[in-house]
Length: 229
Image 1 (tube, rainbow, N blue to C red):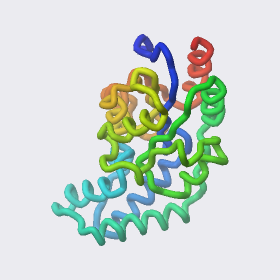
Image 2 (cartoon, rainbow, N blue to C red; image 1 turned 135 degrees about the vertical axis):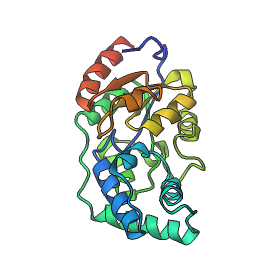
Image 3 (tube, helix red, strand yellow; image 1 turned 60 degrees about the horizontal axis):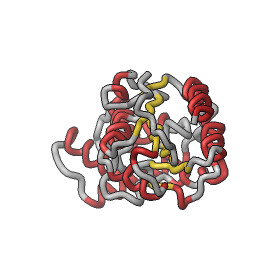
Image 4 (cartoon, rainbow, N blue to C red; image 1 turned 90 degrees about the vertical axis):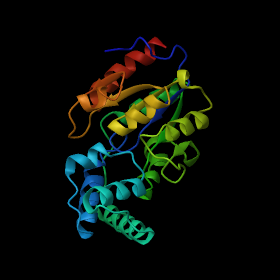
């Protein structure tokens, strides 16, 4: 594992939400697939994981261009995303990923700022962050806040701004290839955790400094890292 570039003075950890704090990617993928199917688009399951981190509008535009060879209308974007939101509200409650509450709590207890950076605009999880992780709405960058979603660096640049630190004073925790690309483009040390169906190399090839196969192995290593700070 390459940890030589780990920040010498860690001030903030920027956490992705879906697939890092919550086991929610199954719900996101299933609702994307069902929503696109209603518009005559057969969106592959693997692609839903590969494109995680995009804003909803960007994902819809991508699917329409790739499968229908045209841009969606503003009404189609709104109607499709509204339908996806409806399906998300009806989906089973996403579970908290193993030991991630401890990871966030230990991070905060070490005096390190915790910020969530997600492309999601789904209220069902955003509203749980306070009660589940003690992360207030003021420490969240969501799809409502960005013009350019992941893989553009803007989400994590905004996360750094919210945390009040520079790129070399922060770490990103991500599970999605596009999220890793976004963090790397923002020049932040990036830890990938492969909690979905993707091949591990999808994260390392995008530039993740460290890659873990699950949140449990990551949590063990994170305790070691915090002790050494």
